Length: 485
Length: 86
Image (spheres, chains in turn green, orange):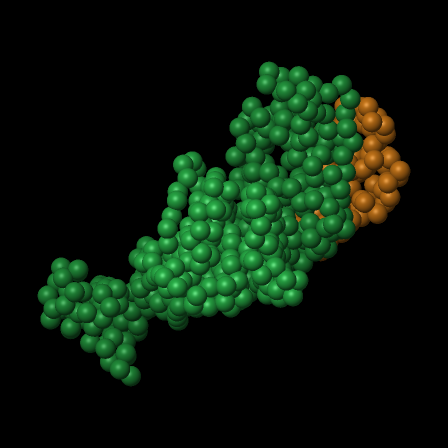
């Protein structure tokens, strides 16, 4: 009874030396069982819990990979605890370890989401490592499945947004790409960094008869020049010092599918010659190989450079450019398709919330206004980075203007000042007042921002801004009226 | 000019396979050249229009006629989109 009723403030923890081994939570009311099983779990980070409360506490505070769970616990049943774990945590595998090894129990627990059911016996203790490894392998597989599902969902949403973009130029590009998707034509996608050139390439691949084949992407600016030929075309054993095995290149790994060459303007002259040969003759030569290998790969390329200028300046081969110039499209930057930002922001929040297993946040009107007004020099990639941060910091909450870092707010301020200038010019007809009006507008916005940031505390806002409390009160008067109204 | 260089490089022009497309007064021309390479006979189709050149490579035995028209139409559509975007 003493053992059953014992409540420990923190579960026992034995930390193994080494780099982040998987964590196993052992939940059993019998202390002797912990002593018996512990040595068989060497190599894992082991956390011991003696009842349901301790187990849930450990699960909420620590990273757990696998739970070894007894069916009999003093404050709950193993089945109830299993249900709770399954409802709250999708990333933990549960193995039932019990003396009650009836088939009925095994079936019920597996139905409720346990990965495995192990009877308490010395023979099984000796193999507990294998059971845990299988559970870890299963978890990796489930994560891969989840990632694939997230990617698939994201791509479907992203394709739909491209097709239904509020930007006519982009809609026209998508309509053209849809037409040429199922042809062997090479496509060159131009656009600033971060505009989503790869998603366009994936769109073409997904709408072609090659969709069942692989889609491989290579960022040529990220591969060292010395390795680029081996990376793209592969090499045979002994081709160069250190080539101790034959390696298949990206072209061969994309056989039957599509190869997306990002930042093609970065390709070294020697690799340009080889790429030209592939496009002309549909065969590659692995480094060191005596014979060429035929390949069936559709090539899509992208660049943020002006390739025509690169040709004129002798940095890019003219004959290669002509082969990329059949279908050359320019992706508009995000600032030109700002009407897509609300939908894109929602989709990105949903994508990252799913990845982080959190609720997606929502956006208030002023937050969305800030996102729409910002220029996004880093395009969709910059928007995605910001939203990733917002999802991590405000899961399931409404994001307000003051949750967004101030550097994103300046264009909104500019726009407000512009409106004010326009309004001032029309209403007063005296240009001498415009500077005053714009300054006034900026000050009011800044004060309002700081009050929000200080949780509505005007004195704190005054201190943070380095102005008097009466100034803050005066500058926030209209805002207070708005808030009350 | 580019076609002359092609001929000089050993390609043989096939005038009977040339195609012309008129798009709102803009002439787009496709000229077909045959070339022998290590892998066999190939066609090089040179598309010229909107102040731009493009080349597609077609292996012998493919549906050349269809490939030429497909490439010309896509070339024209992409050039018009770029012109609109400017």
